[in-house]
Image (tube, rainbow, N blue to C red; front, side, top):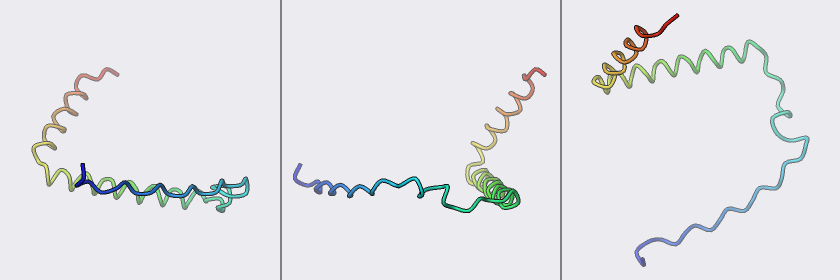
Length: 76
């Protein structure tokens, strides 16, 4: 089809990383930093879920009902 644009040229490959490069080059993360990052992530996730529930109330209601049904039928 003549109306479609040409495909973009492939990007040049990055040179292979040596053994000194990569994640090990970054300084070790402390336990406190990891916990802070995780707490921030969980706060953002909860906020996104609340927003989704406000925007899609019908879907949120069915998800709540489905979760309640799963919890009622779960055997300890």
